[in-house]
Length: 155
Length: 155
Image (cartoon, rainbow over all chains, first blue to last red):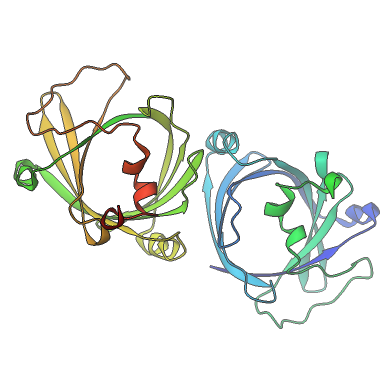
């Protein structure tokens, strides 16, 4: 129930060609308060509700709880979410012993690309691919809950 | 997915003797915003997550979505909820063709008793028992999400 992850910017959309898998994500927030965000997500034809607690000081780890829910119910819940609904394609790119998730944002967040890597410990070492850009772990602006309030095009 | 209910105050704790069933409820809020409240509840040894949308003008009906979740997960989610956790005993009292739910609040809300009746239509007629007090449907102060922020003893 603890999620440990690090985030990086990406400036080259061509790297999506390395993906072994991809899916469409739409997500919105019932609460975007940092202490208790509640996210509704569809991932292709599946639905999820996710609760996340407050991040630790480095922004690397936080409590996470998730349940799969019927797709139709996720759509109804998305309809009462705050502000903007985030629309992105997630590409999975294996590298070394890990798998990077690259989010390519659409619509109001076109031009934003974020790579995430999930770790089993905060100090876990991982192989950095050359295409990995600046680290933005813990930078609030790159939280999806922030982007849903203030889309990239308005930065 | 639409919940239609009316609420009434109760001033006599003796009516709990009429109950055919009762259970202990603890509940907290991940979001208490009226447009999208997210409630975590335990009911005896069961757990639930519930999302409610905005009420209509009369305060009688609102969108409601609920999922049962493991009790232990509900306890972890309660630990990150806002402010106060509500603690109450719910008594079920059948009357005519309906069943009233009487919530007897404990702790910081000791002294507060609220009866609720769930209806299948806003104008559905129901038999009013003599012990039913003032109607408070649509009065925000009697929303549990409000009580969780400002307990009865501080009114």
